[in-house]
Length: 175
Ligand SMILES: *[C@@H]1O[C@H](CO)[C@@H](O)[C@H](O)[C@H]1NC(C)=O
Ligand SMILES: *[C@@H]1O[C@H](CO)[C@@H](O)[C@H](O)[C@H]1NC(C)=O
Ligand SMILES: *[C@@H]1O[C@H](CO)[C@@H](O)[C@H](O)[C@H]1NC(C)=O
Ligand SMILES: *[C@@H]1O[C@H](CO)[C@@H](O)[C@H](O)[C@H]1NC(C)=O
Image 1 (cartoon, protein in one colour):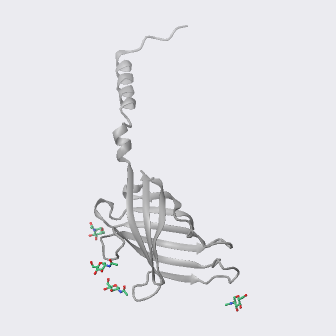
Image 2 (image 1 turned 180 degrees about the horizontal axis):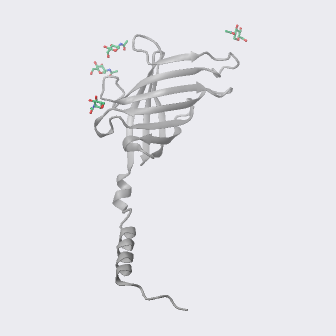
Image 3 (image 1 turned 90 degrees about the vertical axis):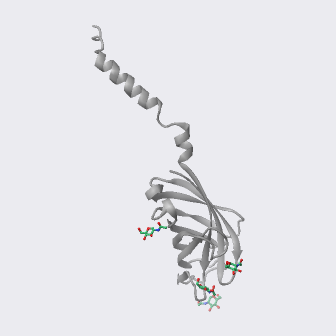
């Protein structure tokens, strides 16, 4: 038993579909889907412009503030100065989740307000051990132009003060 010969219309269909497959996705399209943002986050824990509040005090069990829960709505700016361009806000919480060192579980949404990113968000959740010079936190998703995003944040302490912690974030995403 042999297969019937292909009809011309079937051959044309196969040609079109194979062309479609070959041209998608191109290397250029792939490169365009990666993004990198360098920005600063201002975590202000006291004073008139406070942005972060301790809502659950620690359990007084260790020197690591184990059990503290802080909720925040922090500005994200282009430069380390709070008056530099506003890019968005980081909204979420961090809890001291280690009994032996100051290491937070961070859960936050970065909501952007600038240009084409206005209204789009990235969701970051991970471990932030503040004594490490560079911490890596996963970007687990996003919305708007960042729908289906995956990536990571390289998180550094730019300046730690009694009133304000300025964090330097390098956000790498693949959309
Ligand atoms: C609080 O923010 C206002 C408005 O941005 C600013 O003028 C003021 O200097 C800030 N205060 C402190 C203590 O940073
Ligand atoms: C915290 O622990 C210390 C030492 O164990 C104790 O002296 C202090 O009263 C405790 N504070 C609170 C608020 O429980
Ligand atoms: C931040 O910017 C303001 C206004 O441009 C300036 O007056 C201030 O000195 C700057 N602060 C720092 C720490 O650079
Ligand atoms: C961002 O979107 C909000 C709500 O849609 C709008 O009010 C605002 O003007 C937009 N900002 C920019 C910079 O486009």
